[in-house]
Amino acid sequence: MKACTKCKTEKPLDEFYVDRRRKDGRQPWCKACHNAWRAANRAANPERLKENSRRYYLANKDRQKANGRAAHLLRKYRLTVQEYDAMLSKQGGVCAICKQPPSDRRFPVDHCHSSGEVRGILCDRCNRLIGQAGDDPEILLNAVAYLKP
Image (cartoon, rainbow, N blue to C red; front, side, top):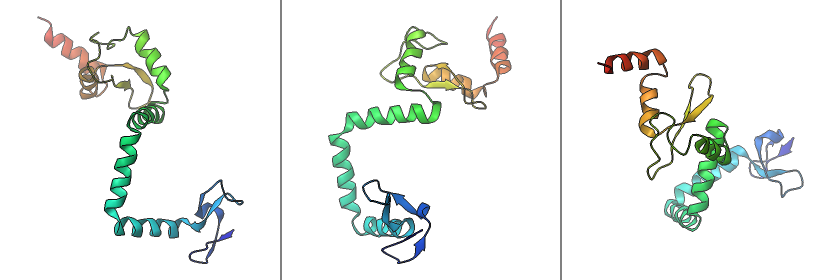
């Protein structure tokens, strides 16, 4: 238990954000007080916060993009950037279906929507094709039969 220095209420430790710089490892204000303070501060100074965010982004654009991509791959597919690059290299640097090289954008990761398992790396067009078919091979086989004379 810990007392919030703002509202003076005693609350469990999980009601306080982590702050490793402090002896007890928690911030002095509870989450509710901290969130209320942040909301009031944002409402009072919206332009300052936008400008600070913009300035930080411009100063760290490359790092932000790299970290964002790495975080996205890890969070959504449990893949590191190195694993993604290795998978694309194993496919010869091309889409696994149409065998076209990437344009100026990176290829999306193809995965099974029910199990979450990564199947490969596809171009955007092929990834959408599979998605529109609902990941159903029967629909794609019917499409192939329809297209063949």
